[in-house]
Image (tube, rainbow over all chains, first blue to last red):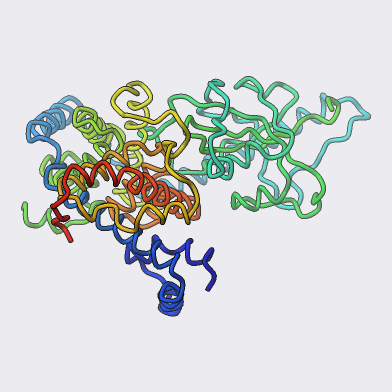
Length: 255
Length: 210
């Protein structure tokens, strides 16, 4: 094991996190032979002891008792005021989703038919649906954020997270970028996002993505368009994390 | 009933709570409030913010809990996700609660590089009492940038796995790992840098925890 490899796992080693037994043995062996890494391991262990002391500190305490009383009162008021919505069973939710998907497909077919009628005779449409690309939809996005601020260029980690947004030919546009000459899909969430954790501010970035970026997001990439780029709108929250993405198809006559 | 609830899973408690069961709400609150409160406290350094965040998290759970989807993560991750969102929002509004450093991402001043870091000594707490150690570590964590502070609060102090923390933050597991490594590196450097003055204030005491 080299020192640079040891540095990467010194924290896990001192924190007692799970790792392969062989890797752990090699790391300890390396520390026994390398004085610099042995010192680092000691420093990491000391830090770990400090972190544990803080984690176990009784003074950190917990929420005050009156908060529980207030929350219980609020809960009881809410139950009295309105029946608590009971979530539909998963089977029914799935059924509803299937119906919604079917309805979206019908709408999509109608929209495509209308677009093809209204397009100039010489225009050639790009077939985004080939090769497993996400199906475009004319349904507008349910939640779109107004442009807020530029991505904070603070560190490499954030750059990694927002690589979707920063990858190649990034263009900022107004939030409602979709116009009559664009067809967009619904937003596809990239992280856990519900109303409770909903974005209150953020921005939408129009980007052109290579197929590899789609694969990195776990989305299907067009097999027959390895050299082409796909236009997409990426919702980036204030913390620099890409939260959702939708794909955009532009009318070829506009390009 | 209370004993039964205490054995129920978070998801079961949430289901009962959403059906109007106040005892289930209390049971879920009792189980999760401490983690949520401490996370907010460690992120903000303010008991007031921590209390407000805890309140907001459980109010949000009452209001929007039916939107929880177990396929996307655990109830705990869901709650910590809300707590993170609320805490960061509050911190941005009230920067003055946290003594953020202006001179670089790791608070500046300290020597850079492994060799220099190690010159400062392997154990920065060797001459400190447990209380001093805790204060020192707490301040060092509060001085970290938010994206490093949250992984320390979740993984190192909250004992979450990298996967759970990634679910809370909404980033890849590798990002959590690299952030935590970087955060620890910064903490070692910071604590090594302050060893001198702190040690001088308590020359004869030893760290009680060790």
